[in-house]
Length: 179
Image 1 (cartoon, rainbow, N blue to C red):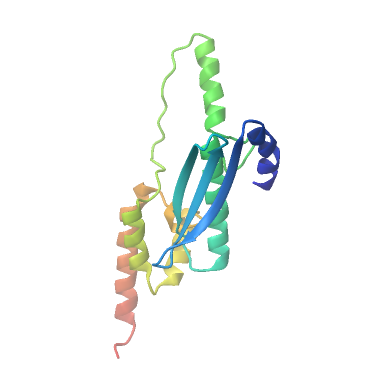
Image 2 (cartoon, helix red, strand yellow):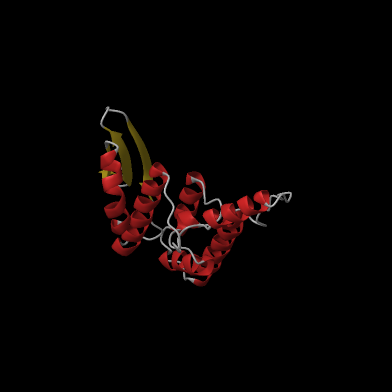
């Protein structure tokens, strides 16, 4: 991201634009990332996103924060980076479609078999509540779904995941002697 900002800041400056990001601590202990693009005329555009790492440790927080900073910057400025492993390859798909249109072919919209929309805030809160006191289960979920934080889980996997967590908790609690 530093390399990207180093390249775009002169372009922004030339057009009287400035870009900034900062964090706000919430009373509930959460963190909100603010991203703002400002123009010399006084107009501005802001985006906010709550930072919700899958684990309560600094590495998870740093990872989620870095991803959100990048996503917010690119989104507000309308940027894509060629060859970026974190890009969803939408630009590549767009070029293929444009080539098809230019050749006169009919374009068929291809939809993925499953949706990759991530969890809603309500679903994330429900999952985090279920995992409270079971950090090892949270780690297993991250590994199984190959995600960096719970908020990245595909919505289509939520119901199955929640059911499995509840079954495992019941099993574990039955095996544990009562006090």
